[in-house]
Length: 174
Ligand code: FES
Image 1 (cartoon, rainbow, N blue to C red):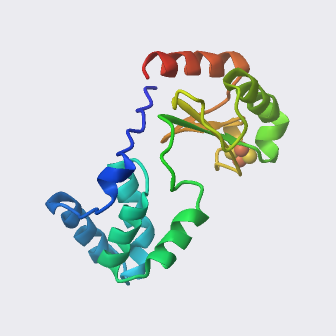
Image 2 (cartoon, rainbow, N blue to C red):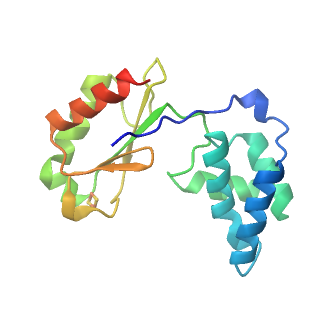
């Protein structure tokens, strides 16, 4: 598997975000697919995160303007879900599942290993900005526990050795 790194656009470049023709076209497609404008909020945020790497305040304001919502409402939705980044993320975000099936299949040991190998706790980034650790609830892949999601990819049936090999590979490509 070759997980793509997240390339975050710097905050200052997103200060006065406006949507170009490509983004506008994709937003219009989403608006056609949902019954109300408000219902497109999460897909539009996802689209923006895919494009800019994260949801900077300037992006939140642009989404609010485009969908006719208040920035506070959009920010409330963006900060509710762990899948949205409201701060610039590391290149690789490691979401370690902490729920029961993963926990009893070695997930706790994987999380402890990540903490000690990377020298960070959940919620933190390594100083070089390559890895970020997040503890999350069930990723919906309990049958292949333990699971760590890295950016958009699932790494399943993990052992400490396999996880180390994955991290070595990602570090080498960062
Ligand atoms: S408990 Fe970890 S994926 Fe469900």
